[in-house]
Amino acid sequence: MPKRGPEVGAGSGVIITANGYILTNNHVVTNAKKNGIKVQLSDTREFNAKLIGTDKYTDLAVIKIDADNLPVAALGNSDDVEVGHIVFAIGAPLGLKSTMTEGIVSALGRNIGINQQDGYGIENFIQTDAAVNPGNSGGPLVNINGEVIGINSAIATTNARYQGYSFAIPLNLAKQVAPDIIKYG
Image 1 (tube, rainbow, N blue to C red):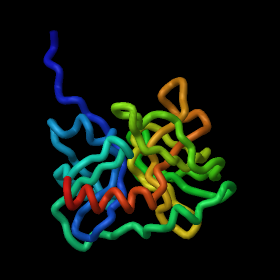
Image 2: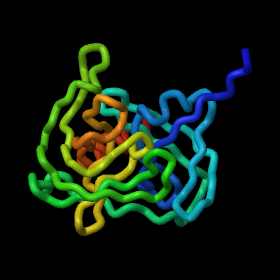
Image 3: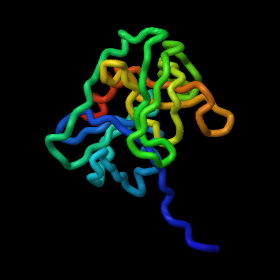
Image 4: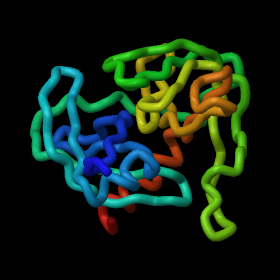
């Protein structure tokens, strides 16, 4: 049998502080805990990241790179999102870097049963038809003002690829969870 190398996965993230804290999904970093996390910024700089902590009940995680003066994402208010709003999903799907797709919000407060851990999970997804594929997870869902209003997290699919529905964690939920992860791990 040939030797098997480390498993490599990909995801996206949102820089939330100028000193290197990045918000992403728990499912993006779950298997990376053992093998380390590498981050490549849109300007092609690469960093090793430290896992700060995760929350499996919301599928959120925070990692940190050793850098300063990073561009910080404009964080919006997900409570202002309405059905029919135009949104953009940004990330690195299927190995393609710096990709953006457009869609509309088709539902709010959607529970799709994927964050259930030990019979408990917090779901309140923003549902859109912006194309999201493997690698988009953890990336921003952005409104027409360029403000992050969600963290792309899931798709409804029968073939592990986008088929019309994608789901993002509302940013206001992430704004409550991320500081606790940073403070307590």
